[in-house]
Amino acid sequence: MVNEEKIGFHKGCLTTLSKEREELLKLVNITEQLMGMHLNALKELGIDLEKEAKKSGEVKQNDNRTVK
Image (cartoon, rainbow, N blue to C red; front, side, top):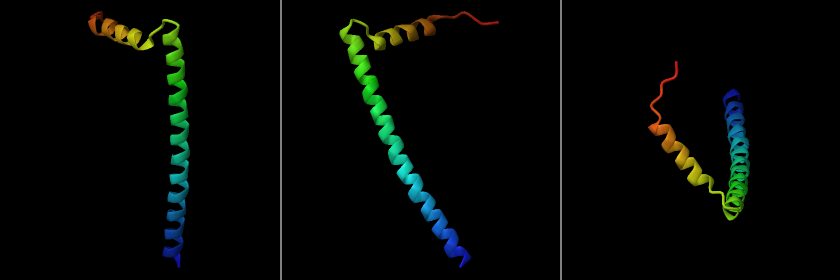
């Protein structure tokens, strides 16, 4: 009976974790949608964060200073 209990326990855990993962994915999708809406709103206001991020990345790549 001990093995059957262990099997039931693990199956129950997997079921619970699977449902938790589904809910987490829903949350991530909602967050991505909200971020996209804010990015679009900023673009409409003339601010393109994607361009600024690329520009910032180029500056960091060309920056050869050393930190001591």
